[in-house]
Image (cartoon, rainbow, N blue to C red):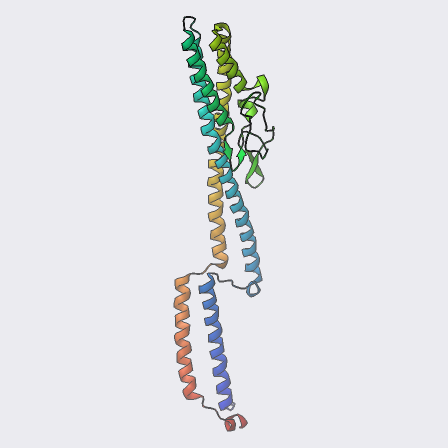
Length: 297
């Protein structure tokens, strides 16, 4: 036997259906405006937990990306300075060979000595190359200068390694210690050696000048070895950057699967729901015309 359908039950069902449509429309609107199908964690705790985990992994990946950029900046700052030092030392060697000619006049020797001194200043500038206010060849010290500008050219740095985490559990040393290329201080550094060379050239001490050639060769070797180290580290950075970029793309794709929204699809569905809602309003307005007497029946 069919139950009695009252005006009140019709009105109640109509209002319930309208509210359900409004709820669906509101949810679609939230997805369109927020760009996520998971605007509230309480709606789906499993997906919310997965999204949180993925966002944490993306944050770590992003931090590693910044570290990679920082490491590369150290490399690109040090390498040209070392190349400049190498070029200057090769020029010094050429000058020393010329100065070793016993027939050279005093004026010629003085000119060569002055050029060696000028090249020493260039190399001193290379050794004090800064990056973000720090001397890149000064170890872990925060100072902007690694070597004093005059005798005894005291080394203001230390032997510390500047490290950056470039991937989970992997740290890279990004600095070249100045003392391995330029020496420490007093007579044990390149600048004092060049001062001595210039003085011997001026004095016409060809024996000492000839003996300095092996010292210069040793300094050139140290500088080129340092550049080779940077080259190897750069290759490691290239690989780490590729891995990091691929990992980021993978994590973002997973996150999109968990909470992503297709804006076009969501907009079409919202439009359809809105059309249905407007039509339902019109039908309800015509079929449900309740009065106080209707509810009392």
